Length: 366
Image (cartoon, rainbow, N blue to C red):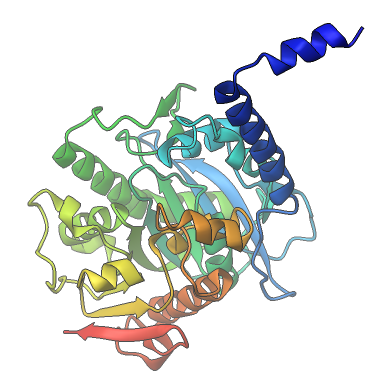
């Protein structure tokens, strides 16, 4: 009875059988490897962080992270739109094109560690950081970093841009806009991104006061990669009435300024700190009052990429894309958060609390 079946199996060419067997084994192995992943950084046991999704008047949405003292334990998901979010992210890192979207599927059901729609802790004048994602990013990719930041006593507003550079976003009418590099020209993208940051700076304090009955204190803009020139353009163009007190930049992709920004090494008109990875430091990227090299940090360490899968896998992936540096990713997040809250509180780019941490190396000072 089994002989015909065995004959059929044995007749499958090795050029098909071996890759199919490898793919099956790889997929099973990948599924097993992400059990208990992603890894969430620890925060003070007496601290809770809330998260909610808001829309600006223009329809652009953002994800808010903030301290809360609620006793509720209903956690918001890591990926706001579930598999829709993870498929968009997989497409941006090339996984979807290779049939490997399943490598990020576990993020669709993961917990953010943030209490869903919780009230903001009843403290007035909390500092606010309005943050712009990188090229192909979204408002969820740095959830654990922003959770750590919020636990230090700030509000983080992660903008999800509508210029076509988000891996995926849902517009006000429910339409999903996936990444589309041709949706706008580069200059149009940068202008749209900057305008959305400025809109958030203008309207968020009122939205937060109305919805959460708390006032906002110091406001700064920030961004990762393409988000950094977006923040620079917005900060340089902001009116005095917006009272933007500083810029926090992570691996600023200054080459994507399209001739609209001051050059590499320039000083911004408002206090600015750039934090750079090993790759960006090697390329001599310098911007603002102070540039700090985070030793052992890769480009992906400024989002949550190193925490999505076991470190050995993400380090191996870094042979192809800079997903995870050799330093402890949770330590990187914690020191970035400590430095950010110190800068928000002091607005002093030379403060010891801002620039002095184990992984920090001050490489440029204006």
